[in-house]
Figure (tube, rainbow, N blue to C red):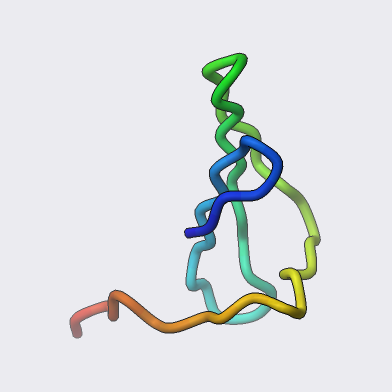
Length: 52
């Protein structure tokens, strides 16, 4: 997850392209961001893994 322009972005870890949701703090709404590229200057780290 990261914060950008007063929005909170949560990135999902699906196989294939990442999925991302944006939370708008001002409007109190969640939006699915389709077919997105993550900012290249961010630092990313896995924080959760699926159990089998």
